[in-house]
Length: 110
Image 1 (tube, rainbow, N blue to C red):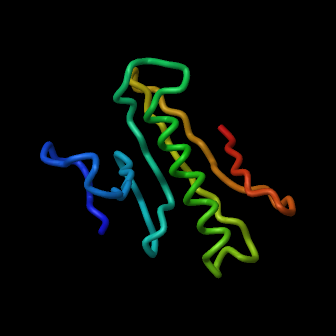
Image 2: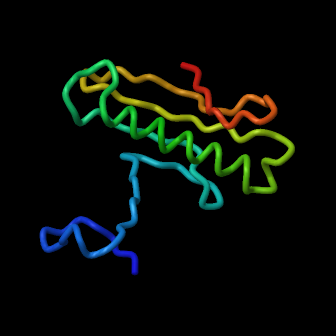
Image 3: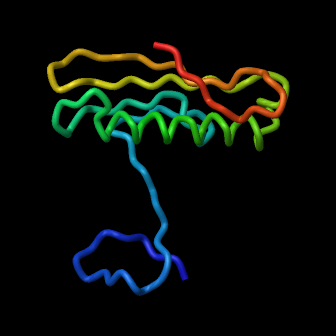
């Protein structure tokens, strides 16, 4: 049995939980995310938790689309992500996989 976690009544020994990350803003087409936007809600670090979570989620989406969706068998899926810092500045990331055989690494460019 899988449960959605989160409440105070949850006990850690009641079985596996389902992780459902949620971006602060999300634009999708055909249930596939096309733009992730995350606003920094943690202290100012070089790599805030929200930024790491956004890039990890984006990497999963890119790998999933390229491996399992027919539309991206011939051309690689590219995902845009925007991280808004607590001072209002924003960084845009483009996540993609290079077409190197047997390499599942997801790259990003600023």
